[in-house]
Image (cartoon, rainbow, N blue to C red; front, side):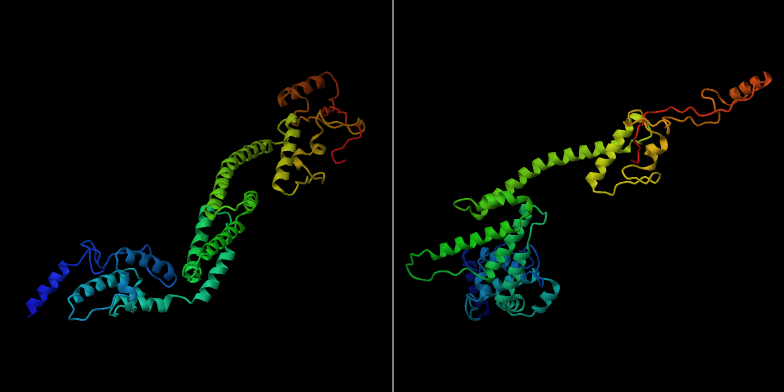
Length: 371
């Protein structure tokens, strides 16, 4: 009797059509990972959507949602149903975290596991809709690329569609096209939400899109903004290169010390002023004369006024253009030569002269560094 029952079951399994929900392909096994991420406490809606898509592809969704009932043990399809359900249980538990898998380990059918997960993780419509709406209102581009910003919005929109589905017309032979008008309204709302979160750099293209008649679709709006971002990146790269070159040139001018050559003092001071204006830094202050705009090492009141300095003659205050400081008071003579020079005049009875520094008087009529 048992042998006859086994033979009947084997014939039934051999007769299962490939389109049957009981059909199991040779490549299927329970430990297959069929979703991108395992189920955790925070991603049930995404996980559920991916698992439903997979079960539809495998033609097994009826066993999970309960539409395909478990047959009686005496039915010839009993073993085929049990095998298919065991395969689904393996797929579900493999795609879970260990803590969640432990809690559903002793479920009898895949439908029980599915129902338990929905009761435990699926949030109520109103609280989750409020959370998604709040997240949608706070989502901004904030310097990210247009693609990543749009992708973030798209994920919120898709989940919100599951929590708050669009109402559909149930009238028989309805010709009001209410569903199409609802979809158009929803797309306009998404366009506004997308444009509102863009950075201020896209204000021009945003104004142009809002002024278009008729209004573009959501996809066309995204492509217009993405193209504007691409053009901005191309032109912005040239502006950044030019700015870097200018900054490099100013840096070189600023690195030249004002006391190196008289002809570069004015250039160095102007370069320092440009750097100060561009960087919004505090103006340097000279600790010698107390005036701003220069430092002690470049103070003309301390080192003398150069030849190109304009102004009135001030004979009472001659300024030294260059003071040769050294151990010998006579320019061109070293210590030994100066000693022999002095001894020569002492032998002749000539008094040793009192050497003084050679001062070059420069016309600075009525003009002072501090004035």
